[in-house]
Image (cartoon, rainbow, N blue to C red; front, top):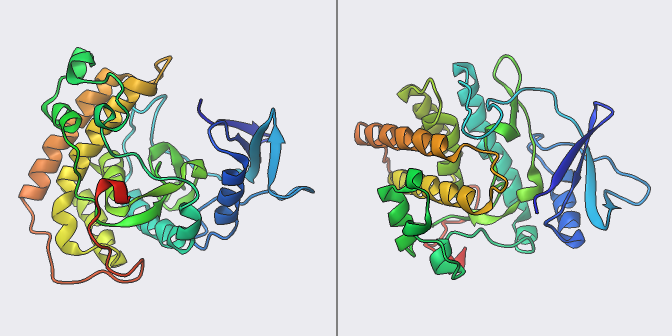
Length: 302
């Protein structure tokens, strides 16, 4: 069951956490309340604190952000992102995650991101043969057959840094980032691959110079070894496959046109291949600032 979000009196939002324990919601409220990036919503503190109980589930009320996002009725209906917004979006990713890095101990209480394919991870009957015809893709078959990923940067991550959760002003500036209920321990570079897939390579008006802005922001943040930028195509392909399989597993009743989303990701991956083949993206600079050089991880180590 997913979380529920309700707008209250126009200026406030209430989130009921249907898939989090009350102690987890309390930890999330602590992280949001101490956010240094200024990008997460302000929590309304009531007489009993930040967390209330509604229908036996923990809930938080926060102030509503102004701004618009660049997605239509579902994830397969993406609207073009103005060129002025891309640099702000890329910058906000690293500002938010620099703030989250200060709460990594809290992240350990909120669980770990699931990376293993379902057929390997939980034994459920998900295989290439059980997928609809629109998902019979080589990269999805590869995802379902693999048990390894180049995960190198353990981090406390937003996990849902997507179009519907990043709000922008008319001039492109990011006014806020919502849906912080998904906070979890994961891999920082995988999260950026997720971000670039949605904001750059899936954009209807994609331009390679937009991807340049995200790579520049990654280098400026100095949180990732620039030599590991070469891993982004594999991580993007893995994200696209995982996302489509997850929609097949969990999107019931269907709210997203999965066939259309598969088409979008096919186009995105063609763009990814062309972009990274045409650019040399490694420089001899080492990461600093987020964490000391992260050692390579097994999937179980994330």
